[in-house]
Amino acid sequence: MADAPTLTRTHPLEAWRPAFTALSDGMGRTDLAIELLPLTAALDVRIEPGTDGATAVADLLGVPLPASPNTWTSISDGRAVWLGPDEWLLTGAAASDEESVRAVVGPHGGTAVDVSAQRTGVRLRGRDARRLLAFGCALDLRPASFPPGSCAQTLLGQSGVLLLADREGDGPDSAVLDVVVRCSFAGYVAGWLLDAAEELRPIPAGPVTDSTDQEGDGT
Image (cartoon, rainbow, N blue to C red; front, side, top):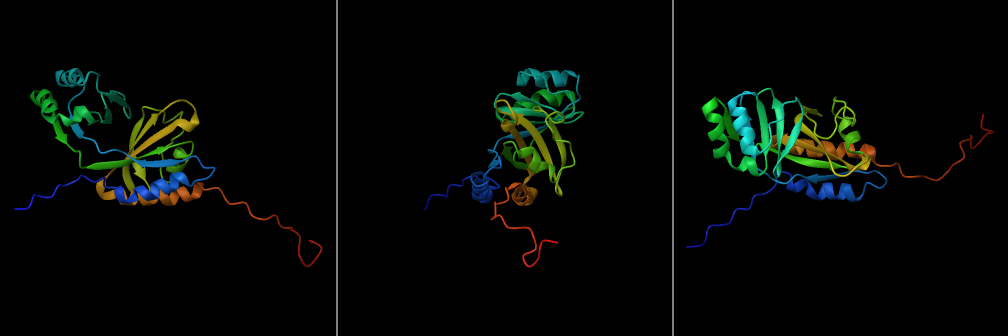
């Protein structure tokens, strides 16, 4: 009997990787790169803030759940992202242990649901990352209004997305923005990003021509 085939998990946007790489390598003077976010475990947690259940989750994670709206904090190799007054998205190693999280929130009326297959995303890097998103997002994405550690559920083009601002290093060139989207809309968002990025390409310099009337005196 033949061995069963081995199934390999494929990124929902794997087919778009070459186009993102070509864009990042060929933008000329524009400072923009787009790459796929790695696949990671994700857990949607609902628990009333300020309760023993929220404290139990904080003890499990090693850090409190973010209490300020539209912010996220680092947890081990992932994030705890504020989604609502009583809802957070956990990613990374902590999210892979669904049973442990459910065990601490369940007795306090909370829930923990594995949503690892629900969303996927891309990472935008560079000075023009915020400019690109501004073409299709109504939020003020300037660093002063959307600094590192911020997150927001909003529209990008015609798709709902979760935006997260991160940073590696200092200065405007170090901007890092993650765009997380439901898998069913991922292809649309990928295409939108590539199309919008064309607006950032520098216009090729053409030959200098005389602007005067070629047949007259320029009047």
